[in-house]
Amino acid sequence: MIKNLKQSFFQVFAVTTVWITLLLSIFFNGQTIALTYLWNLIGIATIIALLFGVIYSGLWNYLTFKPITNILITSFLNIAGGLTAVWLFSAEMFTFIAPWIPGMLILSLILHTIAFYLYATIDAKKKAGELNALIKNKQ
Image (cartoon, rainbow, N blue to C red; front, side, top):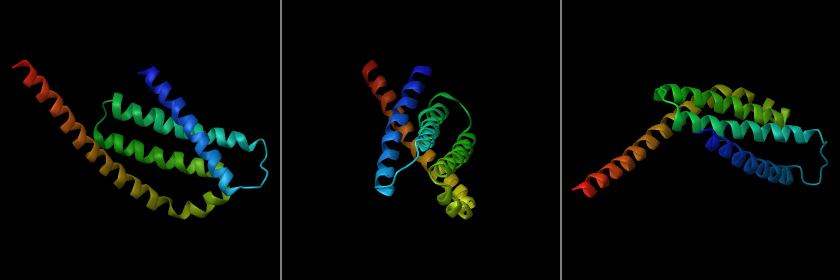
């Protein structure tokens, strides 16, 4: 489990770093940035890697909380991590989107609930198919 979570963390960290560098190239094209701003980028990549590489994977694949607990935890951490990443990217952008935080929380809860039930349905069908195949092979 730990090995898988480490691998997921570093994969997401690497992809996020490349993605943020691409965004900087597009939005700050031709502008110089301070070398200390790179620590903000490392912070953003770390937040995203912890969220999607470790926390999501751990909650949905390894821990056995009730679905509502997983939905609440992931919804809240997703918004908190996303807002922190936006603030690290640009404090001005964070100030611009701050009034919509309550709506973001509600939307996050709704979308995480839908995603969980779709995932659960697909996973249940997959496992039922695997069990049926095992039963067929035993007969």
